[in-house]
Image 1 (cartoon, rainbow, N blue to C red):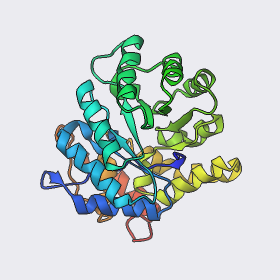
Image 2: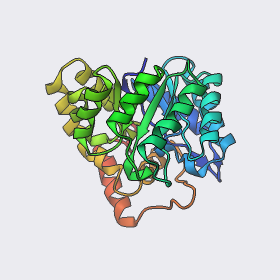
Image 3: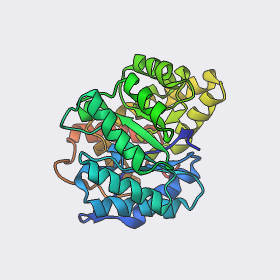
Amino acid sequence: MFRGSIPPLITPFRQGRIDEEALRRLVERVIQGGSHGVSVGGTTGEPGTQTLEERKRVIRLAVEAAAGRVPVLAGTGSLRLEETLELTRYAREVGAAGAMVIVPYYVKPNQEGLYRYFAEVARAVPDFPLVLYNIPGRSGVEIAPKTVARLRRDFPNIIGLKHSSKDLEYVSHLLQEAGRDFLVFCGLESLTLPMMSLGAVGAIAATANWLPKEVALLCERALAGDYGGAREVHYYLLEANEAIFWDTNPIPLKTVLSWMGLCEKEWRLPLAPTTPEVEERLRRMAERYGLLGGEA
């Protein structure tokens, strides 16, 4: 079910509220661009500044907009286990194809704590696919490959992991421990091709908010074993992939999307607009990719 490019969508805001029409347009745009799935509620979607009801609304809207054409992977993780369980059960109820659950942040749990946390989630929804979300730069701790392997052995509905780190060695150890058929997704845009060459099955890459066709093409070529063709797309996307991180994600992303007329240039505190210098770099990048001329 989960393969290829699954764009992690922004959550568009207008005057402090979720812009539902803009979210529907974004879902439609990435599907029309050839994306193989849609993800909401991940880091790019700013879930930490949303209420539980807002997060639920975003999941429902994405499922409704996708209308069964591609699977929806709902970000449901939270620091509090009770919230994670509530959101994950809700995602299953409204028709998401699976849930992506982040390593709990701020508290820096040990590996046994991580095992028990994800075990509780897996037990709560035994018939619902779960993708773990390893992002040590945000959560402050990494889930070890051996812990992932233990979880996979004990809970068949834990089917994969999104890896958002420059540590490529981790991917090799993870696939060695958890099995080569475990579904690994790249979460660090510029490493999509390297991770897929090691056995990852796709990318949950924010760049696909800008360039869904190209990210989907890279994944398709890599999955088909056309690494020469995938390499060409990799280098084409290199600056766009790097631009995502010229400021904190999703600030650059929303800045350019607002120029494209796809959302308002709006975040929730503590996120704030970037500097004029970064804006100028982003504008030059967007012009080079044709994002501001209606071609994208």
